[in-house]
Length: 512
Figure: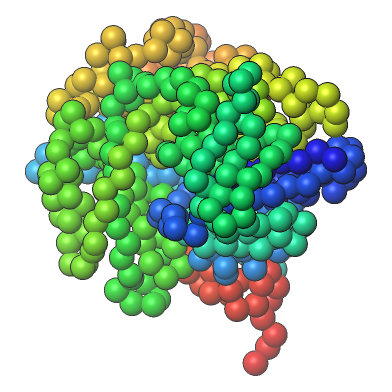
């Protein structure tokens, strides 16, 4: 029997436990036992958090009912991210924004994109609005689906805003139902074998525990991979400067207050703030660089943003970066113990999903448990590097004039691969061939939404003298606009949709 010991709960621990237990039900791994040890003395951070659309597939594979999940995690729908004042420092009350939707662009042969790129900048509709109608739907306050559409499906791509501590509780119940053994106890000592592997984990009340594979989900503490095994950590603070966040929660002014179905990302002088709408409250945080702002200044920014609300701010410190070898011998790190970068595009949960799936797929039914380590480590390193490049793109393209933003444009802080891609994209749009699928979290069109949302210029061949091509491209953009107008009429208000789902699930309520 293979024995797997997960140390730490939270979203990372319980999602990993559930994914592994579900996968091992198939019998491909033979007999496998999953145990999770969780300290009752350590509270979850519990901030409002965004997810990727991949979470829908993960929850469906776990046999979770979508409406039940949403009720229990205080979840709402997320259709993308609205970036406020990222391009220029606001002056005299001026404001600008761009939108990064989950829906892929609707053009197929590139003609509409080329036509849009050839338009004068002041004559173009916003890129996300031109290429998909999700921006129009989300900013009109509409949800991505209707209540009679089934679990995890809908006409528009979507993810969720969730209460992370409540999500962990729901996942814990599902994991236990799948056979995961749960031990509530504090770890007192980690015993390391002479060959550098974990030998045993000692707990206060339940003694020593041995396993074939140990999975470190202890968060920033990294009790196994960091403290016991000393796996090196690669800091990227020279690329992504943000290393702290001050967070809070706030109730809505009234129960029927409008509910946005996108994350608000607001640029500030030394960083940016997120604003996530859960069902009954907002989760808000200000992410900043300690080299450009102290904690008191950061708290003042948050209080100013939350003016009119009584809040209890909490500062979270982190080092941006990742473990160079998250899998060492018989121990693998998942979640914050393996790495963390600022939550600008909500990559935290999707990296947990990825790591758990890779462990389930790569762990051999017999033989050395460390056999997949090299492959796992290479893919996770490349995944983190590519995420860092994508996040850096948001800063490189900004023309804000504060020191934090000017420093982000310093060529010395821009990774070589990103510099090379930007040079190429001045002469052609991003392509799927720029990226390796297994190592990417974001697709070519995600880069396009950021590039062209922030005013990046790509010089394309051709002229508007090609009347037929230009006319067809214009018809395509007109159809997208018309679909958006119709969708804003057909799709329900987001708050109304959430109330119907919480009350009745994904079906029409019975006539009264």
